[in-house]
Amino acid sequence: MKALFITAPQKWEILDIPTPEITHDEVLIRVDYVGLCGTDLELLNGKHPYFSTHDAKFPMQIGHETSGTIAQSTNPALPVGTEVIMDPIVGCGNCEACKNRATWCKERIEIGVRRGGPGALAEYLKVPVTNVYPIPQGVSLRDATLAEPAVTAIAGISRIKATSGRALVVGDGTIGIIAAQVLAHRGWQVLIAVLSEASAERVRSLGFEPVLPQQMETISAEVVVEAAGTHRSIQTAFRAVSAGGEVVLLGVPDKPLESFDIAGLVLRDVSMYGVLNGPGKYIEALNLIAEGVIKSSKIIDQEFAFAQFGDAIGLLANPERKLPKVLVSMRS
Ligand SMILES: [Zn+2]
Ligand SMILES: [Zn+2]
Image (cartoon, rainbow, N blue to C red; front, side, top):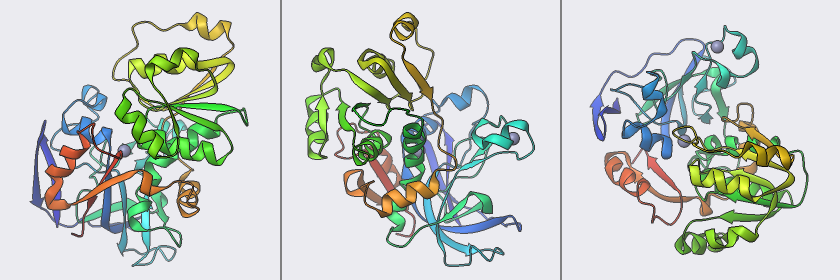
């Protein structure tokens, strides 16, 4: 089968390798679509924090947001032909952390990201049965790729204790837009903080009210969802939250913040939640896509054939693209 290998920063090649062999606890998926995100860009550039902890190294096979069709299985619940998505996080299954959440396991493999789990930019992918979810009726293979980024937004929103009011989403990438769509569906008045007039225009076209940096002084919100992960966006999030409010942190900054106003949090009784991924939220994510709450037409920009991976990466790295998500179609 053909599979993409990142061999060094910004160098990749598509190689012919043997199709993976599965055990009884795994299924073989014929990959249909792969969504690309900032994590892929960081891995491709050799800049992801997992390189510094040796949890990622070249050569590596990336691709963690995927949908496909079961090609081999001994599991009666997942027969050949079933359309599925996968949860890429595979805990060791033996440690204390794994009893709670695979995302807390120090030994965890993240398929396409961490500890050598071969990623989805290949014709076939083997995945543990426990990490596979059938795609419900009415959801296309293309749209189903959004389930992986969606679980992070859904897990973040599930931590919020308040039930109504104003919510500010900081960041207009895939996870930010999904968070805004879900919050609006739940009745929140949603604003999205953006950095430029071009982003503001885009956010307006998606049906949300943008807030530019010069307007931030006057904005406060009971709930702030930080989905950009930059120092600036995190500062914006904490400045905007109202007294007694809640901040949900979804973005991961590349290094510690130099100055952080802890006193400002204590004196205003602010709660903050760090949220890594959303194990257990995949069925909810797929249902929200099926119900049209998560709208792919407002998230997916373009799709590229596997052979055009370079063009897909070029668009992903271009901040001027219209919509945040770039897909690779593995069958074309
Ligand atoms: Zn991703
Ligand atoms: Zn474990």
